[in-house]
Length: 203
Image (tube, rainbow, N blue to C red):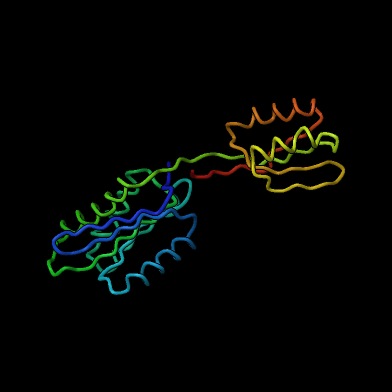
């Protein structure tokens, strides 16, 4: 499963109607609603604002809207394009300006499918990467051996000083064994490393 790295916009004119498609990476329903509201405001004079979105690591949340077009002729075919590309955490919106020529149900399905598929051709896709959030505890005397390595290679989420020095970082799970080996060797075994949680990220 994958997502898209950045927003894509494509415009098509089909039988005098203009179709403007947006393909937008989103993380949650708040992102979806925010982007939908922005586009409805930006294109407030459009005939239709049809959309489809998928959220969740297992495509748990799926929804589409035909926004006044005949049932399953707009949002549904766009949803099918998203599913065909095995995407999640993505919103697609097609804004239509009616050009005076009716396309019929089949023509609408083809038009909305093409508008979304055209954006797909321009998109850069991400992949799902599993991360582990790790806490590393070391004696104060080992700071010089560890902290520079952490700062040079990872983003420190938290550093605290108590009986030991504690660091929290996110590490690709596939690199965890190597990471633990480096820390162990750097401290000559005088360290403790524990996984706090794991999560997936699209990048």
